[in-house]
Length: 399
Length: 79
Image (tube, rainbow over the protein chains, first blue to last red):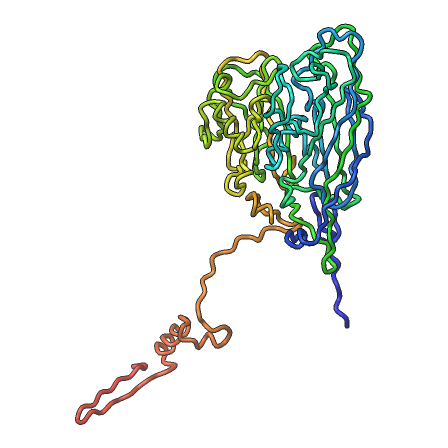
Protein backbone atom coordinates (compact mmCIF):
# COMPACT_ATOMS: atom_id res chain seq x y z
CA UNK A 1 0.00 0.00 0.00
CA UNK A 2 1.43 3.34 -1.03
CA UNK A 3 2.21 5.71 1.81
CA UNK A 4 -0.26 8.50 2.29
CA UNK A 5 0.88 12.04 1.95
CA UNK A 6 -0.50 14.50 4.39
CA UNK A 7 -1.32 17.86 2.90
CA UNK A 8 -0.48 20.47 5.49
CA UNK A 9 -2.81 23.40 5.83
CA UNK A 10 -1.51 26.58 4.26
CA UNK A 11 0.88 28.35 6.64
CA UNK A 12 0.20 31.85 7.82
CA UNK A 13 2.66 34.55 6.86
CA UNK A 14 2.06 37.97 8.33
CA UNK A 15 -1.55 37.16 8.93
CA UNK A 16 -2.37 35.89 5.45
CA UNK A 17 -2.50 32.36 4.14
CA UNK A 18 0.49 31.57 2.01
CA UNK A 19 1.32 28.65 -0.25
CA UNK A 20 3.62 26.04 1.20
CA UNK A 21 6.73 28.17 1.66
CA UNK A 22 10.05 27.61 3.34
CA UNK A 23 11.67 30.34 5.40
CA UNK A 24 15.26 30.12 4.27
CA UNK A 25 16.97 33.52 3.99
CA UNK A 26 20.32 32.36 2.52
CA UNK A 27 18.59 30.43 -0.27
CA UNK A 28 16.20 33.29 -0.86
CA UNK A 29 19.00 35.83 -1.24
CA UNK A 30 20.75 33.57 -3.70
CA UNK A 31 17.84 32.96 -6.02
CA UNK A 32 15.56 35.98 -5.74
CA UNK A 33 15.46 38.77 -8.29
CA UNK A 34 15.19 42.44 -7.36
CA UNK A 35 12.49 44.21 -9.31
CA UNK A 36 11.34 47.81 -9.66
CA UNK A 37 8.04 48.49 -11.32
CA UNK A 38 5.23 51.02 -11.13
CA UNK A 39 2.71 50.47 -8.38
CA UNK A 40 0.93 53.60 -9.58
CA UNK A 41 1.63 55.33 -12.86
CA UNK A 42 2.05 59.09 -12.92
CA UNK A 43 -1.22 60.64 -11.80
CA UNK A 44 -2.32 64.15 -10.87
CA UNK A 45 -2.43 64.59 -7.09
CA UNK A 46 -5.86 64.82 -5.56
CA UNK A 47 -5.07 68.32 -4.31
CA UNK A 48 -3.99 70.14 -1.20
CA UNK A 49 -5.83 69.14 1.95
CA UNK A 50 -6.95 65.84 0.43
CA UNK A 51 -5.36 62.45 -0.08
CA UNK A 52 -4.55 59.84 -2.68
CA UNK A 53 -5.08 56.18 -1.94
CA UNK A 54 -3.02 53.60 -3.80
CA UNK A 55 -3.81 49.91 -3.81
CA UNK A 56 -0.42 48.31 -4.34
CA UNK A 57 0.21 45.32 -6.58
CA UNK A 58 0.18 41.92 -4.93
CA UNK A 59 3.42 40.32 -5.87
CA UNK A 60 6.66 39.15 -4.32
CA UNK A 61 8.19 40.50 -1.16
CA UNK A 62 7.77 44.27 -1.02
CA UNK A 63 10.76 45.99 0.57
CA UNK A 64 10.21 49.64 -0.22
CA UNK A 65 8.31 52.24 -2.19
CA UNK A 66 9.76 55.11 -4.16
CA UNK A 67 7.42 58.06 -4.41
CA UNK A 68 8.00 61.02 -6.65
CA UNK A 69 5.91 64.18 -6.53
CA UNK A 70 6.66 66.67 -9.24
CA UNK A 71 5.24 69.15 -11.67
CA UNK A 72 4.41 72.81 -11.71
CA UNK A 73 3.02 75.02 -8.98
CA UNK A 74 1.43 78.12 -10.45
CA UNK A 75 1.34 81.21 -8.26
CA UNK A 76 -0.66 83.97 -9.87
CA UNK A 77 -2.68 87.06 -9.07
CA UNK A 78 -0.99 89.64 -6.89
CA UNK A 79 1.76 88.00 -4.91
CA UNK A 80 1.62 90.30 -1.85
CA UNK A 81 3.23 88.74 1.21
CA UNK A 82 2.92 85.17 0.08
CA UNK A 83 5.29 83.22 2.30
CA UNK A 84 6.17 79.55 2.49
CA UNK A 85 5.89 77.86 5.86
CA UNK A 86 8.44 75.42 7.27
CA UNK A 87 6.16 72.60 6.21
CA UNK A 88 7.40 73.23 2.69
CA UNK A 89 8.65 71.29 0.83
CA UNK A 90 8.78 67.79 2.32
CA UNK A 91 5.66 68.08 4.40
CA UNK A 92 3.71 68.70 1.25
CA UNK A 93 2.98 65.12 2.20
CA UNK A 94 1.45 65.58 5.61
CA UNK A 95 1.50 61.84 6.14
CA UNK A 96 2.37 58.63 4.37
CA UNK A 97 0.09 55.94 5.73
CA UNK A 98 0.68 52.35 4.82
CA UNK A 99 -1.46 49.42 5.85
CA UNK A 100 -0.60 45.82 5.06
CA UNK A 101 -2.07 42.43 5.80
CA UNK A 102 -4.39 43.65 8.50
CA UNK A 103 -1.82 45.86 10.21
CA UNK A 104 -2.93 49.43 9.92
CA UNK A 105 -0.50 52.31 9.87
CA UNK A 106 2.72 50.36 9.59
CA UNK A 107 4.00 53.62 8.21
CA UNK A 108 2.37 56.75 9.55
CA UNK A 109 4.78 59.64 9.28
CA UNK A 110 5.28 63.05 7.75
CA UNK A 111 7.10 63.58 4.48
CA UNK A 112 9.99 65.22 6.33
CA UNK A 113 10.38 62.21 8.58
CA UNK A 114 10.36 59.75 5.70
CA UNK A 115 12.83 61.95 3.87
CA UNK A 116 15.15 61.99 6.87
CA UNK A 117 14.92 58.20 7.09
CA UNK A 118 16.52 57.99 3.66
CA UNK A 119 19.68 59.48 5.15
CA UNK A 120 19.41 57.56 8.40
CA UNK A 121 18.90 54.16 6.87
CA UNK A 122 21.21 54.50 3.89
CA UNK A 123 24.73 55.67 4.58
CA UNK A 124 25.33 56.20 0.88
CA UNK A 125 22.91 59.12 0.66
CA UNK A 126 23.97 62.62 1.64
CA UNK A 127 23.04 66.17 0.82
CA UNK A 128 26.53 67.70 0.72
CA UNK A 129 26.91 70.46 -1.81
CA UNK A 130 23.25 70.62 -2.79
CA UNK A 131 22.07 74.22 -2.78
CA UNK A 132 18.78 75.07 -1.10
CA UNK A 133 17.47 77.99 0.94
CA UNK A 134 15.87 77.68 4.35
CA UNK A 135 14.81 80.66 6.44
CA UNK A 136 16.80 83.19 4.47
CA UNK A 137 17.94 83.75 0.92
CA UNK A 138 21.50 82.64 1.56
CA UNK A 139 22.04 79.28 -0.03
CA UNK A 140 22.74 76.38 2.27
CA UNK A 141 24.73 73.43 1.11
CA UNK A 142 24.18 70.86 3.80
CA UNK A 143 21.58 69.80 6.29
CA UNK A 144 18.74 70.50 3.87
CA UNK A 145 17.91 66.82 3.19
CA UNK A 146 17.72 67.76 -0.47
CA UNK A 147 19.17 65.76 -3.33
CA UNK A 148 20.61 67.45 -6.39
CA UNK A 149 17.93 65.77 -8.49
CA UNK A 150 15.20 67.49 -6.49
CA UNK A 151 13.65 70.91 -6.96
CA UNK A 152 11.94 72.82 -4.18
CA UNK A 153 10.49 75.35 -6.60
CA UNK A 154 12.71 77.78 -8.43
CA UNK A 155 12.20 79.59 -11.69
CA UNK A 156 15.84 80.09 -12.47
CA UNK A 157 15.62 83.80 -11.73
CA UNK A 158 17.91 84.75 -8.85
CA UNK A 159 15.24 85.69 -6.34
CA UNK A 160 12.38 83.52 -7.47
CA UNK A 161 12.02 80.43 -5.36
CA UNK A 162 9.68 78.72 -3.00
CA UNK A 163 11.79 78.35 0.12
CA UNK A 164 10.65 77.56 3.65
CA UNK A 165 10.33 80.67 5.80
CA UNK A 166 10.73 83.05 2.85
CA UNK A 167 8.49 85.31 0.82
CA UNK A 168 7.77 84.17 -2.68
CA UNK A 169 9.10 87.08 -4.69
CA UNK A 170 7.05 86.89 -7.86
CA UNK A 171 4.12 85.27 -9.53
CA UNK A 172 5.42 82.52 -11.74
CA UNK A 173 5.25 78.86 -12.56
CA UNK A 174 7.50 77.02 -10.11
CA UNK A 175 8.69 73.53 -11.02
CA UNK A 176 8.95 71.15 -8.11
CA UNK A 177 10.40 67.68 -7.87
CA UNK A 178 10.45 65.77 -4.58
CA UNK A 179 11.42 62.16 -4.00
CA UNK A 180 10.79 59.91 -1.04
CA UNK A 181 11.75 56.37 -0.22
CA UNK A 182 9.35 54.58 2.11
CA UNK A 183 11.25 51.80 3.87
CA UNK A 184 8.93 48.85 4.32
CA UNK A 185 11.86 46.66 5.33
CA UNK A 186 13.89 47.64 8.36
CA UNK A 187 16.97 47.34 6.21
CA UNK A 188 17.29 46.73 2.53
CA UNK A 189 19.88 43.99 2.93
CA UNK A 190 18.26 41.41 5.18
CA UNK A 191 14.73 42.48 4.16
CA UNK A 192 13.50 41.92 7.72
CA UNK A 193 10.14 43.66 8.01
CA UNK A 194 9.29 43.33 4.32
CA UNK A 195 5.71 42.71 3.34
CA UNK A 196 4.63 39.38 1.92
CA UNK A 197 2.68 40.43 -1.13
CA UNK A 198 2.25 37.21 -3.09
CA UNK A 199 -1.28 36.44 -2.08
CA UNK A 200 -4.77 37.44 -3.05
CA UNK A 201 -5.39 37.75 0.66
CA UNK A 202 -2.78 40.47 0.87
CA UNK A 203 -4.09 43.96 1.29
CA UNK A 204 -1.45 46.57 0.70
CA UNK A 205 -2.59 50.15 0.72
CA UNK A 206 -0.68 53.43 0.67
CA UNK A 207 -2.43 56.65 1.49
CA UNK A 208 -0.70 59.92 0.69
CA UNK A 209 -2.21 62.76 2.70
CA UNK A 210 -1.41 66.25 1.44
CA UNK A 211 -1.08 69.32 3.64
CA UNK A 212 -3.56 72.09 3.13
CA UNK A 213 -2.67 75.39 1.52
CA UNK A 214 -2.89 77.06 4.93
CA UNK A 215 -0.30 74.63 6.26
CA UNK A 216 2.15 75.04 3.40
CA UNK A 217 1.90 78.82 3.16
CA UNK A 218 2.27 80.85 6.34
CA UNK A 219 0.75 83.79 4.49
CA UNK A 220 -0.91 84.21 1.14
CA UNK A 221 -1.17 87.64 -0.40
CA UNK A 222 -4.78 88.81 -0.58
CA UNK A 223 -5.03 88.53 -4.33
CA UNK A 224 -2.61 85.69 -4.89
CA UNK A 225 -3.79 82.45 -6.41
CA UNK A 226 -2.08 79.15 -5.91
CA UNK A 227 -2.58 76.07 -8.00
CA UNK A 228 -1.13 72.59 -7.57
CA UNK A 229 -3.17 71.25 -10.48
CA UNK A 230 -0.05 70.58 -12.49
CA UNK A 231 1.55 68.41 -9.83
CA UNK A 232 1.62 64.64 -10.24
CA UNK A 233 2.79 61.68 -8.23
CA UNK A 234 3.85 58.15 -8.96
CA UNK A 235 4.79 55.15 -6.87
CA UNK A 236 7.45 52.59 -7.75
CA UNK A 237 7.75 49.37 -5.80
CA UNK A 238 11.02 47.73 -4.83
CA UNK A 239 9.99 44.09 -4.85
CA UNK A 240 11.88 40.81 -4.61
CA UNK A 241 10.62 37.76 -6.45
CA UNK A 242 9.83 34.61 -4.47
CA UNK A 243 12.03 31.91 -6.00
CA UNK A 244 11.02 28.28 -6.36
CA UNK A 245 13.94 26.14 -5.27
CA UNK A 246 13.65 22.37 -5.41
CA UNK A 247 9.90 22.57 -5.73
CA UNK A 248 9.43 24.78 -2.69
CA UNK A 249 8.84 28.51 -2.55
CA UNK A 250 11.46 30.23 -0.44
CA UNK A 251 11.02 33.46 1.50
CA UNK A 252 13.24 35.48 3.84
CA UNK A 253 12.38 35.94 7.51
CA UNK A 254 9.02 37.70 7.40
CA UNK A 255 8.17 37.13 11.05
CA UNK A 256 8.39 40.82 11.89
CA UNK A 257 6.54 43.91 10.83
CA UNK A 258 8.46 47.15 10.45
CA UNK A 259 6.76 50.28 11.71
CA UNK A 260 7.51 53.98 11.62
CA UNK A 261 4.83 55.88 13.48
CA UNK A 262 4.79 59.48 14.48
CA UNK A 263 2.85 61.63 16.90
CA UNK A 264 2.81 65.21 18.08
CA UNK A 265 2.86 66.37 21.68
CA UNK A 266 2.40 69.95 22.78
CA UNK A 267 2.72 71.70 26.10
CA UNK A 268 6.50 72.00 26.07
CA UNK A 269 8.09 74.46 28.47
CA UNK A 270 11.61 75.47 29.40
CA UNK A 271 13.54 72.87 31.37
CA UNK A 272 13.40 69.11 31.06
CA UNK A 273 10.34 67.79 29.23
CA UNK A 274 9.78 64.07 29.44
CA UNK A 275 7.72 62.64 26.61
CA UNK A 276 6.45 59.08 27.05
CA UNK A 277 6.47 56.77 24.07
CA UNK A 278 3.11 55.16 23.36
CA UNK A 279 2.70 51.60 22.17
CA UNK A 280 5.74 50.09 23.82
CA UNK A 281 5.55 46.62 25.29
CA UNK A 282 6.58 42.99 25.06
CA UNK A 283 7.49 41.72 21.62
CA UNK A 284 8.44 45.11 20.28
CA UNK A 285 11.97 46.14 19.43
CA UNK A 286 12.76 49.84 19.20
CA UNK A 287 15.24 50.69 16.47
CA UNK A 288 15.25 54.49 16.33
CA UNK A 289 13.68 57.66 17.67
CA UNK A 290 13.56 60.81 15.56
CA UNK A 291 12.14 64.09 16.79
CA UNK A 292 12.13 67.82 16.27
CA UNK A 293 10.62 70.69 18.22
CA UNK A 294 8.66 73.58 16.76
CA UNK A 295 8.27 77.07 18.17
CA UNK A 296 5.99 79.48 16.31
CA UNK A 297 5.69 76.81 13.61
CA UNK A 298 9.45 77.02 13.01
CA UNK A 299 11.78 74.11 13.77
CA UNK A 300 14.20 74.81 16.60
CA UNK A 301 17.74 74.22 15.40
CA UNK A 302 19.46 71.52 17.38
CA UNK A 303 22.15 73.48 19.21
CA UNK A 304 23.21 74.57 22.68
CA UNK A 305 21.26 77.80 22.45
CA UNK A 306 17.95 76.00 22.14
CA UNK A 307 18.50 72.69 23.89
CA UNK A 308 20.00 71.78 27.24
CA UNK A 309 20.09 68.13 28.43
CA UNK A 310 18.79 65.60 25.96
CA UNK A 311 18.43 61.93 26.84
CA UNK A 312 16.28 58.85 26.73
CA UNK A 313 15.30 57.01 29.84
CA UNK A 314 13.00 54.34 31.25
CA UNK A 315 11.75 52.91 34.52
CA UNK A 316 12.17 55.10 37.54
CA UNK A 317 15.24 56.93 36.39
CA UNK A 318 17.40 54.71 34.20
CA UNK A 319 19.21 56.95 31.74
CA UNK A 320 21.33 54.92 29.31
CA UNK A 321 22.32 57.86 27.12
CA UNK A 322 22.39 61.56 27.94
CA UNK A 323 24.09 64.54 26.40
CA UNK A 324 24.53 67.97 27.98
CA UNK A 325 23.16 70.03 25.11
CA UNK A 326 21.67 69.94 21.64
CA UNK A 327 24.92 70.76 19.91
CA UNK A 328 26.45 67.50 21.12
CA UNK A 329 23.49 65.51 19.82
CA UNK A 330 23.60 67.37 16.50
CA UNK A 331 27.28 66.47 16.07
CA UNK A 332 26.59 62.86 17.02
CA UNK A 333 23.75 62.66 14.53
CA UNK A 334 25.87 64.13 11.75
CA UNK A 335 28.45 61.44 12.37
CA UNK A 336 25.76 58.76 12.40
CA UNK A 337 23.82 59.84 9.32
CA UNK A 338 26.34 61.68 7.16
CA UNK A 339 23.94 64.60 7.14
CA UNK A 340 23.59 67.63 9.41
CA UNK A 341 19.96 66.82 10.16
CA UNK A 342 19.79 69.07 13.22
CA UNK A 343 20.94 72.29 11.58
CA UNK A 344 17.93 73.43 9.60
CA UNK A 345 15.12 71.04 10.36
CA UNK A 346 16.08 70.63 14.02
CA UNK A 347 15.92 66.86 13.77
CA UNK A 348 17.41 64.76 16.53
CA UNK A 349 18.00 61.04 16.41
CA UNK A 350 18.53 58.29 18.94
CA UNK A 351 19.78 55.46 16.78
CA UNK A 352 19.77 51.94 18.21
CA UNK A 353 20.04 50.06 14.94
CA UNK A 354 22.58 51.45 12.50
CA UNK A 355 25.80 50.46 14.21
CA UNK A 356 24.97 47.09 15.79
CA UNK A 357 21.28 46.43 16.20
CA UNK A 358 21.64 43.14 18.06
CA UNK A 359 23.64 44.95 20.72
CA UNK A 360 21.87 48.32 20.81
CA UNK A 361 18.21 47.76 19.91
CA UNK A 362 15.85 48.36 22.81
CA UNK A 363 13.48 45.60 23.90
CA UNK A 364 10.56 47.73 24.99
CA UNK A 365 9.11 44.81 26.95
CA UNK A 366 11.84 45.25 29.54
CA UNK A 367 12.06 49.03 29.52
CA UNK A 368 8.86 50.27 31.11
CA UNK A 369 7.85 53.91 30.78
CA UNK A 370 10.27 54.46 27.94
CA UNK A 371 10.59 58.18 27.24
CA UNK A 372 12.80 60.88 25.86
CA UNK A 373 14.03 63.93 27.69
CA UNK A 374 13.96 67.23 25.82
CA UNK A 375 15.75 69.97 27.70
CA UNK A 376 14.64 73.36 26.43
CA UNK A 377 16.56 76.51 27.29
CA UNK A 378 13.51 78.71 26.72
CA UNK A 379 9.82 78.04 26.55
CA UNK A 380 8.79 77.70 22.92
CA UNK A 381 5.83 79.61 21.52
CA UNK A 382 3.02 77.17 20.85
CA UNK A 383 5.74 74.58 21.18
CA UNK A 384 5.30 70.97 20.24
CA UNK A 385 7.48 68.00 19.42
CA UNK A 386 7.00 65.69 16.47
CA UNK A 387 8.28 62.30 17.51
CA UNK A 388 8.65 59.27 15.28
CA UNK A 389 9.57 55.82 16.50
CA UNK A 390 10.74 52.90 14.43
CA UNK A 391 9.83 49.46 15.71
CA UNK A 392 9.91 45.83 14.77
CA UNK A 393 7.16 43.64 16.12
CA UNK A 394 5.73 40.20 15.47
CA UNK A 395 2.44 40.13 13.64
CA UNK A 396 0.44 38.90 16.56
CA UNK A 397 1.56 41.77 18.79
CA UNK A 398 -0.47 44.35 16.93
CA UNK A 399 0.34 47.77 15.66
CA UNK B 1 19.84 36.39 8.23
CA UNK B 2 16.99 36.07 10.66
CA UNK B 3 15.38 38.92 12.59
CA UNK B 4 16.41 37.35 15.87
CA UNK B 5 20.06 37.28 14.77
CA UNK B 6 20.13 40.86 13.55
CA UNK B 7 17.78 42.69 15.89
CA UNK B 8 17.37 40.32 18.80
CA UNK B 9 13.65 39.99 18.19
CA UNK B 10 12.04 36.94 19.74
CA UNK B 11 11.72 34.13 17.20
CA UNK B 12 8.12 33.80 16.19
CA UNK B 13 6.35 30.59 17.18
CA UNK B 14 4.60 29.08 14.15
CA UNK B 15 0.83 29.35 14.24
CA UNK B 16 -0.83 26.46 16.03
CA UNK B 17 2.33 25.43 17.79
CA UNK B 18 2.20 25.56 21.52
CA UNK B 19 5.15 25.80 23.82
CA UNK B 20 5.97 22.45 25.42
CA UNK B 21 4.95 22.15 29.06
CA UNK B 22 7.86 22.34 31.46
CA UNK B 23 9.13 18.98 32.63
CA UNK B 24 10.90 17.97 35.84
CA UNK B 25 14.63 17.60 35.67
CA UNK B 26 15.44 14.04 34.76
CA UNK B 27 18.63 12.51 36.07
CA UNK B 28 20.40 9.98 33.90
CA UNK B 29 22.44 6.90 34.90
CA UNK B 30 23.83 3.74 33.34
CA UNK B 31 21.29 1.24 34.69
CA UNK B 32 20.28 -1.32 32.10
CA UNK B 33 16.71 -1.09 30.93
CA UNK B 34 14.04 -3.75 31.07
CA UNK B 35 14.30 -7.03 32.99
CA UNK B 36 18.10 -6.83 32.89
CA UNK B 37 17.84 -3.78 35.09
CA UNK B 38 16.66 -5.92 37.98
CA UNK B 39 19.92 -7.84 37.87
CA UNK B 40 22.13 -4.82 37.38
CA UNK B 41 24.43 -4.18 40.38
CA UNK B 42 24.08 -0.45 39.65
CA UNK B 43 20.42 -0.70 40.48
CA UNK B 44 19.69 -0.09 44.20
CA UNK B 45 16.74 -2.42 43.89
CA UNK B 46 19.13 -5.29 43.16
CA UNK B 47 20.90 -4.86 46.51
CA UNK B 48 17.63 -4.28 48.29
CA UNK B 49 16.55 -7.65 46.90
CA UNK B 50 19.76 -9.32 48.11
CA UNK B 51 19.29 -8.02 51.67
CA UNK B 52 15.67 -9.07 51.61
CA UNK B 53 16.51 -12.56 50.43
CA UNK B 54 19.17 -13.05 53.11
CA UNK B 55 16.90 -11.70 55.81
CA UNK B 56 14.08 -14.08 55.03
CA UNK B 57 16.32 -17.07 54.37
CA UNK B 58 15.57 -17.38 50.74
CA UNK B 59 19.26 -17.69 50.10
CA UNK B 60 22.14 -18.67 52.26
CA UNK B 61 25.86 -18.55 51.87
CA UNK B 62 28.50 -20.45 53.76
CA UNK B 63 32.17 -21.01 53.26
CA UNK B 64 35.38 -22.01 55.00
CA UNK B 65 39.07 -21.59 54.35
CA UNK B 66 41.81 -23.81 55.82
CA UNK B 67 45.23 -22.24 56.24
CA UNK B 68 47.49 -24.94 57.73
CA UNK B 69 46.08 -25.67 61.17
CA UNK B 70 43.81 -22.65 61.14
CA UNK B 71 40.36 -22.76 59.73
CA UNK B 72 38.23 -19.73 58.98
CA UNK B 73 34.58 -20.10 58.27
CA UNK B 74 31.58 -17.86 57.86
CA UNK B 75 28.00 -18.02 56.79
CA UNK B 76 25.02 -15.84 55.95
CA UNK B 77 21.86 -17.65 56.74
CA UNK B 78 19.03 -17.99 59.03
CA UNK B 79 20.42 -18.83 62.44
